[in-house]
Length: 304
Image (cartoon, rainbow, N blue to C red; front, side):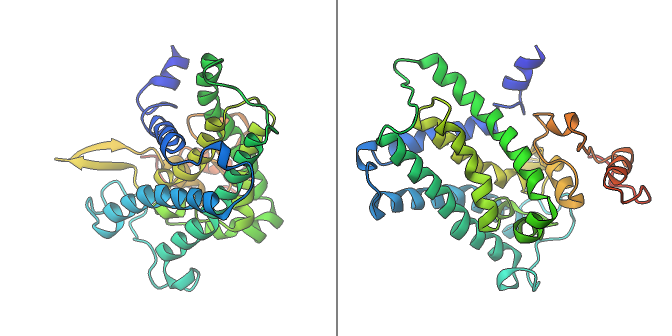
């Protein structure tokens, strides 16, 4: 029952957000992806189509959340983790504007690297260089692989994220993402190109694990879209008449607040297993400071 709840319960691993990312990947594969017969050789045409599609998906999700929460400020500061709004006159960001800085790195670097990994993967499938599995011949395996992608994503993200916090990689690349202490929807994919290469490299798992191109596309689609909600900066989204749905990004907000904790996702307890968990309590904050040899003097925020 706990496993079923983890997979299918509300705010579980599959429902609702990850199910929507699955649907987005299926729609993209069926209607918005060049046929494999076109990808046997590299061409600006079909690669450009993929890039524009990826930009459109990111803009639709991140842009919609940013518009409602930070431009229209439709729910004000209600359920906002940090009472401050995004920086609009800060030399730490390109154009002195946090939102424009985040959009630049997301679209110019993020979507380009995402597209590069996808283009090479489709080219390799088209030329029969990767282990291919047919949905028609192995439907059960393919369905299970769609779920397995979520766990593959979390394992890859957790360990590469910890690696990015090594001092030399942090100073070279990951620092750019962490300029966003006060996060917004566009902050999620705002990374240095080096970090984008590491972040999207999870799709390489499908180069050795028998998969269908849709599985690889879903892996990349999830990596490209999931950060928007995870960095929205709000604990809940107000829908109508004070009704609100939980966003569940407090876990990752604490990572941006304190850096040395919560490297993965709350639903897959890797942080608990490997000693980097922080739930917002003073006790967890003290434990984090002891681990990082900072000292337990300062206590953290109370959990929402």
